[in-house]
Amino acid sequence: MVAEPSQHEIKSPSPLLDARGDLVQVGWARHPLLDANLENARIYRGMLSAILRLWQRFRIKRWDYYGVTTPTHFFSATLADLGYAGQAFVYLIDFTTGRCQEQTVTVPFARGINLPRGSTAGESHFYNGKVRLAFSTEPAGRRVEVNWRGFAGAELAAELFLRLAPEHESTVILIPIRGHRFYYNRKINCLPAEGHIRYGGQEIAVRPDESLGNLDWGRGVWEYRSFWVWASASGYLPGGGAIGLNLGYGFGDTSAATENTLLLDGRIHKLGQVDFSYDPRDFKRPWHMRSPDGRLDLEFVPFLERLARTNLLVITSEVHQMFGRYQGTVCADDGHVYGVDNLVGFAEEHHAHW
Image (tube, rainbow, N blue to C red; front, side, top):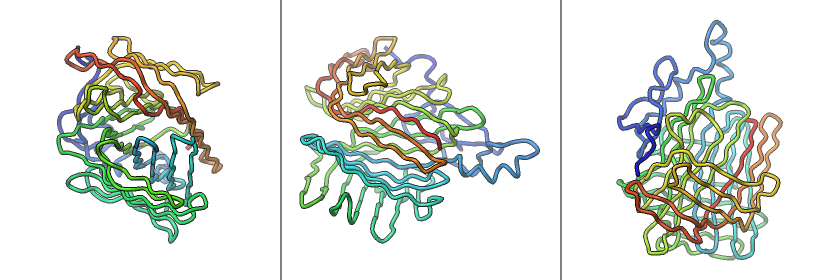
């Protein structure tokens, strides 16, 4: 089996936007080939464009989200610039106890939050005297450092390194959104993680033979009302070897490419349409993800819910992020079918006004 014909693969480098603010290419790629020249964005056009362009910065959204799955915990750290405001947030989930500790710092107009132009170089950082987040790129991978005094009543310190080999492939998508808007996204699964997380007198050892990291790097121009469903997992197959899932839907024009992919030992296997079935009245009930071509048939059984709500007047959001286990089958590009059993990951529904 091969990817559906509608899945257009970007294979040559180019700017993201031309001089008029139009997308140069649309589709998906295995590596980040496009220069994120957001300075060329032109949402508002016509006679009043010069005046309305003053508001354009509030439509541009940028973030770096890192997650690490260990046998006992999930740790995540994010820096985001949402135009009106910026956020630094961290959460730590204990799979054994079901406890989720989470803290967020919100700063007007994202002052003090620095995010690089691209996803292959530079440092993302924030420091306000009490909270420090720093994400840096290195030749062999990504370094994630967090120091947070008074995190949920205790001290939190994390020093993590996520290995990223040059040949390791990513899920890269460029999706148009109506009104000259778009979303440029790079997601990386299955990054061997090492280091430690210290919180409240406890130290969580992170070892690369059992812990895997993921990155969600996003840059785009969004509509004020947005909705998406995202599912992700990084783990190991029963017979050995790393497997990653990235599935989603809900925003933009996906006629050229979806974000649905399977990662096997560092190589992307592109999927087309994937249909989700879940109960939005009870997110704890089993979810089902199936592709019409039969290449993916999974059941996701949640065991923990992380509910995150934000209300900043002009910015509101509600996320139901469910952690659970995947089971079922997935099919690689060459037709080989892999069984998935007890693969820990998450699936979320997100509504935002931003």
